[in-house]
Each structure stands twice: as structure tokens, then as C-alpha cells.
Amino acid sequence: MVIAYDMAPLTLWLMRRMARIDSVTLVNLVSETRSVPEFIGADCRPEKIAPALLALLAHGPGAQTAAMAETMQRLGKDGPPPGLRAASSVLARL
Image (cartoon, rainbow, N blue to C red; front, side, top):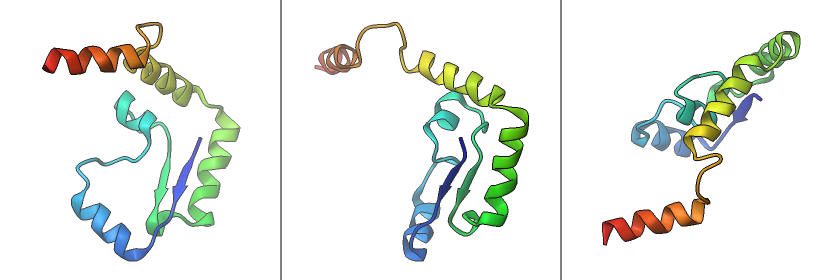
């Protein structure tokens, strides 16, 4: 997986000033890794994206697979259903 996302200059400017995160990919955020390359705004260009894709094709998704597995575990895989966890969280706050 490689993330490439461009946006309007004003939107990008606002996002960079307001965001408190250094990644936009859920796998990177939850696993606390940077195994999924991200190309946002000015970096969203073929000459930057292509080498990342070629490297992924050449070496396989090993680190990404591990990060995705970690993400699923942290998000509650094999645990209670998400709706039940959300309801329990709300009830605990009441």
C-alpha cells in the first residue's frame, strides 16, 4: 500500500497548521510505524510515488503486513464487536 493524496492549496495549508498528527494513514497512526509510504500535497507526484511502489513490489509487503496485523489487534480483533465496545464506553461515561 502506498498513499497518494493531493488537495487544494488552501486545504493543505490549513491541514498542516491544524493537524496534530504526522501521518494520515490509519495503519501508520494505530501501529505507530511509518510502514505505509505517504505522498501528500506537493509530494503527490509520479516521480516520488513510483520508486516507493517499485520498492514495495521488489521487497514485498513484510513491514506493512506486520503493521496491519498490529493495527487490527489494537482495534480489537477477536474481541467484543465494535458496536458493543462503543456502547460500553458511552455507558461508562454516564
